[in-house]
Amino acid sequence: RLFSKQQESTLVGSEAHDLYCWIKEYCVRNTIPYLRKNTILQYGPNRFRNRATVSELLSTLYSQRKIMAAKRGKTIFIQPVETTDLV
Image (cartoon, rainbow, N blue to C red; front, top):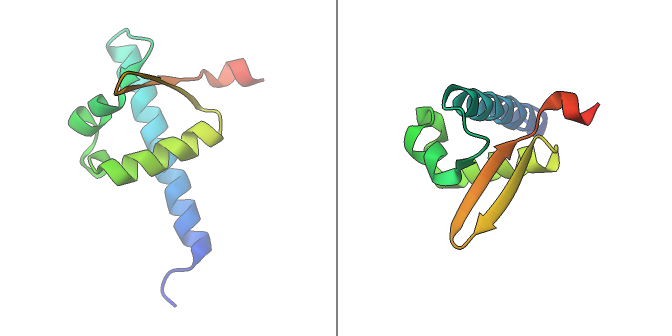
């Protein structure tokens, strides 16, 4: 086997971390507390422009309690959680 499940989950973890860093940096740069999921699809790095990939990574971040998500109408808002708040 070329790829095992372990490597695949590690890859998802590192991509989730990269997405989290991008979300935090985007919010700080634009002085906003949260962003729309669509913003990630439109302005995020190319590897995060696939809706299925982003949804999987966001659910990983949500389960790790690194982001909060809220749905208003059809729009999903993503807010990064400060890691210092978790300690």
